[in-house]
Each structure stands twice: as C-alpha cells, then as structure tokens.
Length: 153
Image 1 (cartoon, rainbow, N blue to C red):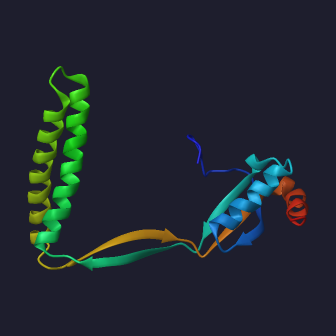
Image 2 (cartoon, helix red, strand yellow):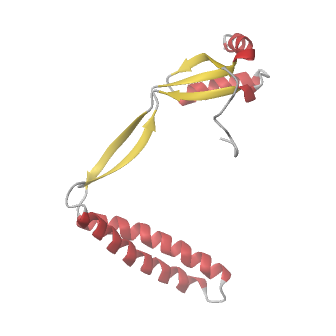
Image 3 (cartoon, rainbow, N blue to C red):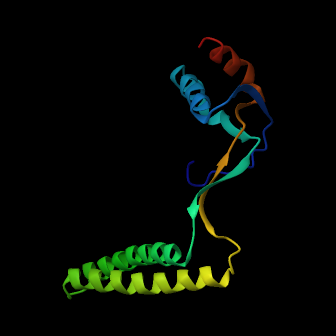
C-alpha cells in the first residue's frame, strides 16, 4: 500500500476475476500492468475474512517471565544503542545496561501480567487474518478492457 492510500473510492467497481490466493491475484494485476493496462484503476479485495489463532504451546509463569524478559532485553538493548550513538559515553556499556534493565523489567511485568490472569489463558499463540478469496476489481469504465486483457493469460 502506498502512503495516503484511501479505501474510499467514489467510482463504481466490478469484479473481473476471483482467486484463491493473494499471489494469484497479484500475478493477474502484474499481467495487466505488463500489458499496459492502467493499474491505478485496479484493486485486490480480500473477501470472507477470518481470524485464525494458532496455539503454539502451554504457558506457565516461567515461560511468561522468560518471554517478557527477552522482549524487554531486546528493547532495552536498542534504547541503549540509540543512546550510545548520540552520547559521548561508550556504547557497549549502555547497550549492556539497557539490555539488563529491560530483561528485569520485562520479566517482572510479564510474570505479574500472567499471574493476574488467574489461569484464564495458559497458552501462547500467534494470530493472523486469512481470506477465503481475493477479488480483482476494476473501475466500471475500464472493466471490459481489463477482462479482455486477462482472458489472454
């Protein structure tokens, strides 16, 4: 997506093709582009969205503290590095101190957060949006032309 992209389009659009994967829809738009079609009048629209949460494992207080400590240590190290780059103080001690401080604070806050949940979420997971299909939509005025071009694939 480009900065300033707006999904509000006053023009009417028509679906000219539907694909099971985003990659297939992307290839269709790339084909249109290769054939000189005005791709600024095209959109790929994900339909039938669903959120899928994949459980990655059991969670206990130790794992919660460890993961919080690792995240905190990384953030602390990055802050220490940033400060080291603009400070006359040697960078390595600032990175090390930031990492240690972040590790401790991250571990404590993550442990407390897990403890306050009272066993209501004893698992870790990752989540993602998935689409059932991807529609290639084109402004009505040029939809016939786009359909003809895509038919030559």
